[in-house]
Amino acid sequence: MTQFTDQDLQQLNAHKLTINQINQQLKNFQQGFPFINIASAAVAENGIMTSPSTEFAQFYDKAKHDYKITKFVPASGAATRMFKDLFEYLATGEMNKTTQTVLDNLAEFAFYDDLTQVLPADAQPKDIIKCIIDKSGLNYGNLPKGLLKFHNDGKSGITAVAEHLSEGAQYASSNGVADIHFTVSPEHQAGFTELLNKIIPEYESAMGVKYNISLSTQKSETDTIAVNMDNTPFRNEDNTLLFRPAGHGALIENLNDLDANIIFIKNIDNVSPTDTRSDTILYKKILAGIAIHTQQQIFKYIKDIDTGTADTAEIQQYISNNLGIRNFDIADIRNILNRPLRICGMVRNSGAPGGGPFWTKNQDGTETLQIIEPGQIAPESLSILHQGQYFNPVDLVCMPYDYTGKKFNLSEFIDENTGFISTKSKNGRDLRAMERPGLWNGAMSKWNTIFVEVPNTTFTPAKVITDLLNSGHKTNK
Image (cartoon, rainbow, N blue to C red; front, side):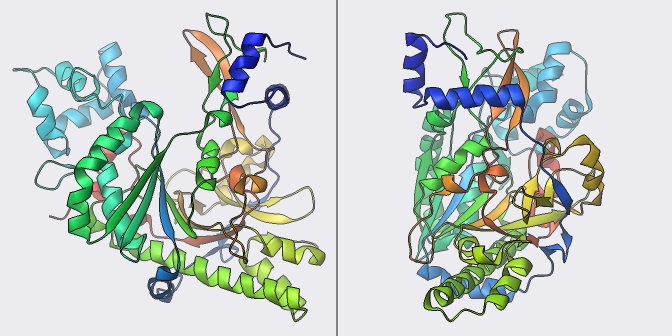
């Protein structure tokens, strides 16, 4: 067992971590995480609800004022990977397709006017690219995606954060208030605050709502220790332990802190211009309508069980057909009903098979619907990926309260046996890093789950800079 110094213990205390937690993390590095036992891909009418009625949207619009609603936007990631090819071009001098596409379409980007203000006279290609990503120019390569200008508006351009404000007002507001929560990195918190203070009055006037905006950072107690390639604790040059943020799965703790009956979750880079997001607004409302309708049915069944008037066979069939769990013990139906609920939009595969919705086999014999990444699947089961029809666009509506009006402790519904281990480096030294169960993977493993097909038009991510040239990011103005 690893021996820790007094200095180590002080570090653990600062991170609000215990020796037992660190020892468990070290054990996870040594043993790895078990592969998920996949039963089959979730497909249309077998785990995926297709063609949901628009009446659910109307139902949501009528019911939403009885709920406190929050939109939760993970926005802590830097845009470094978005500009990976541009960094590579500056480092090697070799032109690549992404960089050439950027140079050929400069005037199409929302940040073009800003760029022209910092470009030197007679700028060469390297000067242009450097001005986009380097701190001597726009510094886009070091900023978070939320602060980047994504879309043209005929004026000064619209940032991703601003788009989430206008989008949130269109489906995540109730009683005249749009409550939006961004998770941010500590080093960028001031930048988010400055931008929000600048644009909120404008968007309140334009959207006719009052914004309640909050920010949080990933909690230090969710960090994980880094290890050397032999799984011993990695130490910095000053002999201190190295701790790393444990991926988006750690954000379950931020989600746990929110006081809202309905929580919409959507990534910062998945946002479209105002005049092209009609499908997004409609299907967000449909998902929320399904969530409210399902929760009301669940609460009725729990009440029936408690009063001795339940039709057990009906409830058993409802769980199997609607809540993403099969082969369960009938004696467990109340416990199964009494869980957080998530409704997840799923998009049809349009490219190579990847992570998405699957039926999984659990140790207790049950089968449940889960969102699984390829790295969680055993090599001998990878062929199941090719059966998949859908992938996960991170489009969720969550209901975190129980039938008594008490909020669930979301940390009780995590599958701690899931996670990811990857190879990273620090100052030229290789290390192994561990991510906690993913926010929509293991961190919500024990939630009741409904997967709903949504149109591809609702999914417009910006993973690389040239994605901003795609139709999903173009305004019709």
